[in-house]
Image 1 (cartoon, helix red, strand yellow):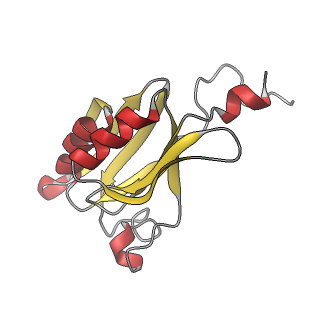
Image 2 (tube, one colour):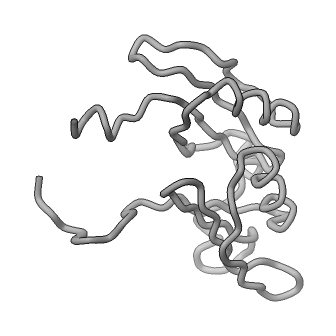
Length: 145
């Protein structure tokens, strides 16, 4: 494998847009356990950028707006409620995450189940419309064992 990124810990970081980013941050903490490490306020109560961590992964959030980036990246409800991507989160004990997400109001799209590839997981949508995959299958460990 060619080393392009050097010693960078995470080279792919999902970035998502929300209409109510502060509420999304709090919900992602309650439902999934994401921890807030940075919130940069924007204009008129918007969030320019927020960084949340989960294990060794990180995501960036920001408020939906009409700036240069926002013209190309919108919340799912702007495209008919369909998400064109989803984050894949590796967990141990998918049942506990499933119960926590359901109890916090996540829309369960695909109920928890064992998969033919060996994992156990589910797909849900947060109140902002973003889709989230939680699964026990660690494809990184499988591909690099």
